[in-house]
Image 1: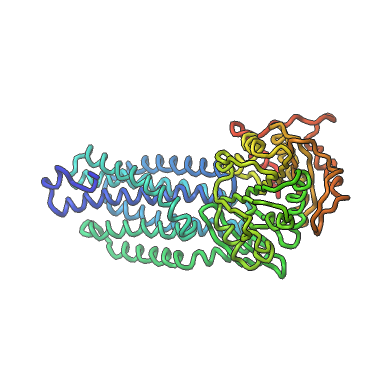
Image 2: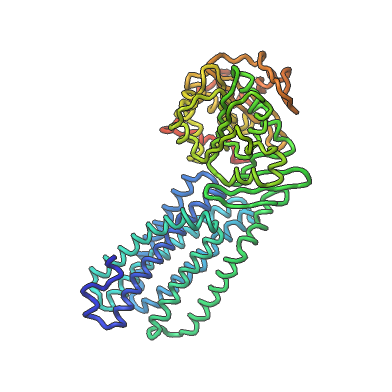
Length: 527
């Protein structure tokens, strides 16, 4: 790459000048890598803590780029002492960027609501502005050394753009899955600091008050070093404040943050902060989810579970002796590994995912259904709520049409559909979306103490008569007599989508018009 080679220039400059100019190009590439990592890191932080990934990534990218523009404009005022100005900027990026994730988690645990969002947007703009100052300074310094302006600009910009690609790839494939968001921020901040210290040494003859820079850099380095080794442990204690019970397991995977808590005998799983189940009452959720579609389907043999990596739905299916195969599709392999290794989860799921008839596939559910050539007698959709774009596509007419096309003629499908009391319009929109594919539907809801009132949608190619559904396996909660009662909804679970005594027509959720996300956010914002 030509920005590493002083082609046509080295011969015209001293060895020292050539070395300095080459270092400038290296520095521009490295700081651009750090800049893009901070940019996507802030988007990931917003998505995890504040929700709505597209909204947060849009805001952080917009603010970061706006900040870069402001920073580039401010850089016009920096016309002398270019290296000292660059070093000061890198010190600021290293300290503020390194502490960003740590402070964000602390605010989410202790500060008033909304302060974490304000901090995120402010730090995004500030780091963007500082990043915008970097390149013009480096271009001017390269030109000052003796490189022609057009060459210095082109080479620094090439280093910046190439570094942007490298930074994005590093964050996706290394920093986030291997280090997590807290340690990544400290490490990337340390890289910025290292660039500053290299420039400080290389241009030491131009630096006044050298001792001040050495002491300041050393103090920042100690802060970043402490954060790298102890930051996650401290954040662990911060995050404990967000959960009622003591945390017994916490990890950040390539897809989500997994937290297990335990208080006496109650084990709870959270994904990205959202409760997935409580061991004290999860059976009230999983029995309707599994046994109602099994009762509706005629002689079910081949079962598909979408989600359900905790193994609890599979456990309920193990009560049927006549099954040929259970296919479980869960995107995150770490959830399944945890379900198969963690003693608390194993006690709950009874080792269901280790059974020979269970085939676990780690793939996006939409992609799996697009390429599957199988028919399924029962499809159980046990996916998280549609609180972001990647999940929303699994609540669209297009996705439910795929499920319909793989459902056997006498089969049945059950979809967990959030709470009809807390998110009334969301629940009935999901039901309407499933019905828009031409399937017959029936609506059910149950009371689950840890969740509240929770809804399901049963769908089939054939008519559904809840009075005729019978469960032929042992259960702790569900009985034949109570099944019809689960289809009756109170006024407060239905009246919110009524107007002037008539039901408001609900528009199916689609890939082209994903309005369900907005409804979901609106419904749950006060809970």
